[in-house]
Image (tube, rainbow over all chains, first blue to last red):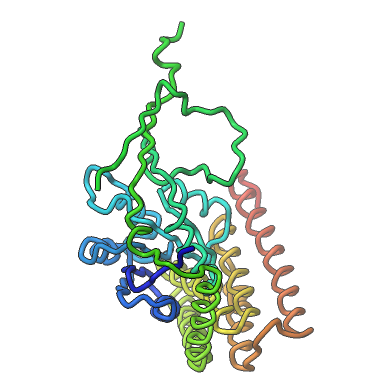
Length: 171
Length: 181
C-alpha cells in the first residue's frame, strides 16, 4: 500500500486568472506540495516548464499569447523539447466534446472541467502517478496513449505487430 | 492499382516511459486514508480562502460591466468581443467555486451565444446587456447556491432570448447570402 508524498512533486500552474491560480495553489499546498510555480499565459508557461522542470503541469486552455492546447503541442516535441513526456493536466471551463478531443489530440494527459474540486484534482494526480500510459509516436501524434487502459476499443486495430516498435526510454 | 506500401498503416512507436514519479513520490501508507486527509485539508483551506470569494466575484462582475460599456461607447471590435467572451468564460468556470453557480450558468449562456452566433458583432447590445445585468444582479444581491424561482425565471428568459437571437442572426445571414431583404 502506497500513498503520494506531494512534497516530492513540483508543479507549474498556468492560468491567466490570478484567482484560479490561487485556488489551485491552495489545494496543492494542502495536499503537501511546496514547489508550485505559476505562469499567466502560454508563453510564460513554456518558460516556466523549461526553467523549473516540473513533475506535473496544470494548464488552462483560454489564455493570451498562446493557449493551453498550443502550449501542450509545443511541449510534446520529443526532438526539440526536453520535457516532452511531462504529464499535462488541462483544466478548463470548456466542457464541449470538441475541446476535450482537441486537448487529447494535442497530447494532454488528462482533462478537468472547471469548477475543480480538491477530490477531482487529487484523483487525477494520483492516476498520473500510479497508472501512467505509454507514449505513442506516429507521423501525426506524439503523446500519451489516447486509448485508456480501462476503455474497450471496438475499432480496427491499426497497431499491427509488424508496424509497431516498442521502445524503452532510458532514465 | 494502389501501391501496396500506401495501404500500410503508418509506423507506430509505443514508448514505455520509466515511471520515475512513482518511484519518487509513492511512499508506504494507506492510500484511501491519504486521499481523505488531503482532500479534507484542501477543502478546509479553500473554505478559508472563500472569505475573499464575494470580492473576487464582484471584481469579475465589474470587469464584465466595463467591457460592456466599452462595447456600447466605442462599438464592437474583435478584441472587445474576445474580452467579453474571456470574461464570461472566466465566470462560467469560476463562479461556482466562488459560490455563485447561477452566475456561472449565465456566463455559459453568454459564451454559447457569442460562439454560436454566425457573426458575433451582430449580436444586439441589448441582448448582451441582459446577460451582463443578470450577472451583476446576482452578485449585487449576493444570490449564492442554486438560486430561487426568480433566478430560474431569469435563466429561462435568457435561454429563450438567446435562441430567438440566434435564429434571427442566422436568418439575416441567410438573407444576406441569397440577396433577400
